[in-house]
Length: 259
Length: 96
Image (cartoon, rainbow over all chains, first blue to last red; front, top):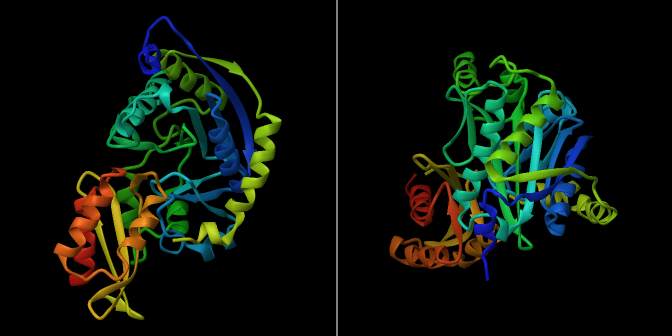
């Protein structure tokens, strides 16, 4: 029997991936759809945005320790726990694009770090097509000129892999800090400046802000690096009804405040 | 000790890795309740809850905790922190 992982890297065999070019949804629906697609396991790349703006926290994080809930309520920011590990992310309705990548486990390497490397370096290649000096760094970050522009998180369940992550288009560090608890001390201007020096965005790096062009470039990175070929698709009825059920979990206090 | 309402807290930033936080209640030198949190990765995720259960009633001694966590780590894959880091954060929480 030929192993799928070997076929995967064969330069002449293309893997068919569904592209879902999604728009804005709220936090609970976005997380429910990602999980519904993960359950089904259809190889998929979905691009989406968040409205209202939201904070997602990693599976192992504590909502109360990470998020300034009062401020979120004041600013109408949703909060949700992901099924993936990693850190807290502020998803601004107009300042970022989120991607999610799903496929059966056997299509990808076995080791988690190898999966991160493959997907993150595909994304970095896509960003380089836009003229940005991007590379995969550390475990799950993509940096441009050494500054973080994208973070990702992954889980493996139901025999499939889900990796999702954010790409910062426009970043407002001050706002981000008002919503996230970065430390016990009130954030000083100096610390904001510090983070501003470590975080960047497509805008700051002088890249195009045309979202369709950015998505095409990212797809190009996947096509080249992982030999994927995309066809335009939709979320299926099955996935929609699965997501409806899952939404209840993501909206529940029990889930969001379990740590 | 940083104890609020009898809850001990500690955290560890893993060099080149992620952050692990620990919250613990202790009674008569044993762990009464323990919760970990942080931005690390663990697969399968639900195993962390099993570890938290396994540590209940365990004596707060490194030699008692160490084998439990090492045994546990054989069945999980961690990224951004490892079994020794979990032991370290527990010890840090006690001695804080």
